[in-house]
Length: 143
View 1 (cartoon, one colour):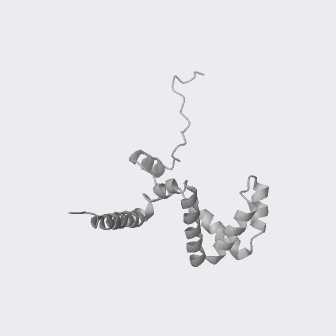
View 2 (view 1 turned 90 degrees about the vertical axis):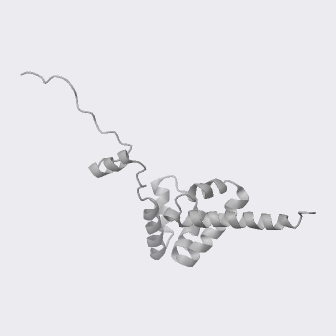
View 3 (view 1 turned 180 degrees about the vertical axis):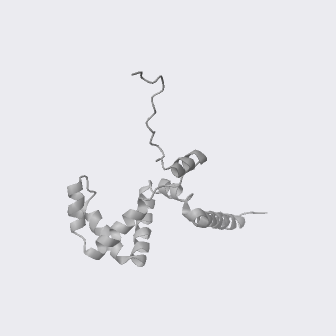
C-alpha cells in the first residue's frame, strides 16, 4: 500500500498552517510578534526584494504621495548629515514632504515599556535607559 498520495496533502496542509500562523501573528497586537520574523526573513536577498516590492505596492495603494516621496528619498540615498537631509527634503513636493514627515513621525514613536519597572519610570516622568543623577550621600557641611 503506497502512501504517495498523502505527500501533496501533507505539503498543502503544512503551507496552510504556516500561512495561518502568519495571519494570526499579523493580527495579534498589531503584528508585534511578526515583525522580528519578517526582519529575519528580509536578510535573504530574494525574500528582501519580494517583501520590499509588496510593501511599496501596499504603500502606493494606501498613500501615493508617500510612495513617491520614498522613491525620491531612496534615489537620493541615505542622508548622513543634516544638510544632506535638508537637500533630500527639498526634492519633495509639499504634499510628499507632509506624507513623508508624518510617516517618519509615526515610526519614531516611543516603544511600549516591556516590564513593570519601565512602566513605573515612565509614570514618574523619567526616560527609560536614562539614569537619574544620584544625590550625594554623607554629612552636611558645617558653617
